[in-house]
Image (tube, rainbow over all chains, first blue to last red; front, side):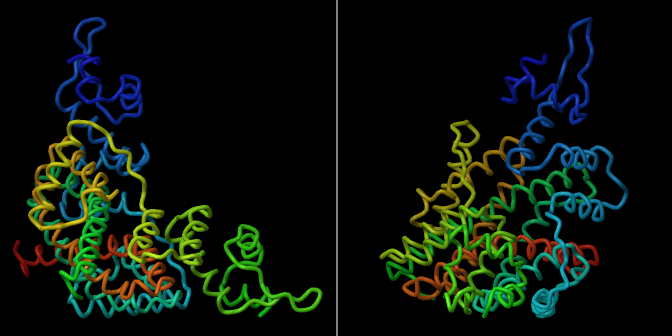
Length: 212
Length: 212
């Protein structure tokens, strides 16, 4: 298809597609004759993905370029690759040596030990979670901290579903796509589902259909 | 305590505290003598909360001011108030009338009907979730969409814990704090726990301790 059709099919304006081409997010189309360039379904899929990551994931063009490199040039160890791809989209957390953060780390370590989670102590999300727990502790919100075990149990259910969807990690292009979309879009989806469920549970409590 | 001690206790620099005072996020201290102003524990708690919402929640001063107004001047209907307070911190979602979003809404409605969720059709998070599902559909990620029922089940478990922590909604100051912190910090905490659990599950799959 030509540029005009590519734009119609994807719903992305021509200048934006040209911008993606200049930024190396899209491979060039096939030159056919002097002023004819043809694009195919791979371009359609790629444009939709870039658009989704930029719009829904709020990712910068630089980060998207890095992610696409993982898809286009996958490494050898699939699980390691998936972790690296995910790391590009997880917000960086600055570890602080404040006493409440240290308490947060201890509390989180207890929760992890109770659930028997392995392979998580060095994970960048450990400090992120410990930091939030530390802040909750500093604000005196022991009530939220006491619910940690239940939150961790729910997180494990979600993770099992996540890994089932990832499926065979050796199918790297597919697996990286699922990991990235599952991280970026999945966080937004789960947050929205959590609020819908809260609204439902609150309604049932109000009508007496449920007690806690 | 005086300003210098207030700063030491909270770890927040004096100019930042003065900024909070000017912006109306803190009530003025008690004037005692010509150049003496005294602050108390309420100031300490409020400063820590503002700091947490700004730093961890990434909320603007304007949004924080709005939230504090809910705490300081609670309305009459507690559950309605909690919904309104939460709405100030949920990212706005622009509904689009694209065909894939319409399909996302239908798919989400099916999931909700299956779980028997009530009181959720008009919720602002409905369109947010439907939008994400629509994007996943457009990207051909049926695999993620098929996992929706499991994600919704996990979201309901989290919501039950959330409502248990909120407890008595008539204790408005406490309930609003829990809702706001549970929304802003809770999303970050759950996202981090999800990644730790993913790392654990991936490890067990690799070592053969678990099959899916």
